[in-house]
Image (cartoon, rainbow, N blue to C red):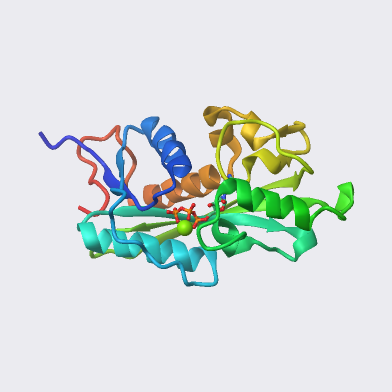
Length: 213
Ligand SMILES: O=P(O)(O)OP(=O)(O)OP(=O)(O)OC[C@H]1O[C@@H](n2cnc3c(O)ncnc32)[C@H](O)[C@@H]1O
Ligand SMILES: [Mg+2]
């Protein structure tokens, strides 16, 4: 009785993100569930990561009357003045596949020298809770873009994104390794810190209040 359980919905239909979130929260003992595939589609029409993350989280929290967590993320390539940025999922077209997006990126950077291929992943995480203020947190990860993909783990641009100090792409890391360093994991850790400051200290306390209760 009175046992703490933090229940929340992951407002994403990206199975790669779902895996990363679930691995992250398993360690905290939180119960998280992805929205059903037939959940209402949220139109990502804001021009910032935070704007889209807040919109996704708030629309799903409202539709399901539950706390909802959303990530809006993307790749900022210096030689492309920060593109594809918030358009990363639709870089090669509205319903582009990861392979199509990666192929377009390799093509656009064909003439760019090795030294000028720097890029970063950016994640904005929003937590929307019925009747409470929405929280937002950010994380980034620096790297560079290869001329050909390597590795089979992860999703999206991971095969092209190399960590210069490790000479490994994100697609060559295990889920555990990626979750130690990724933009998304950093943003999630920031979110946990914000919740702690609000007084949610985690699953260890039975008297603690769950998110949004
Ligand atoms: O909106 P949801 O349903 O969460 O899923 P999505 O795939 O559409 O996600 P975004 O709108 O946030 O678009 C982010 C895109 O940026 C890329 N991306 C973000 N994080 C990434 C990561 O960790 N590794 C590789 N690519 C990533 C990838 O192409 C994503 O589709
Ligand atoms: Mg999206």
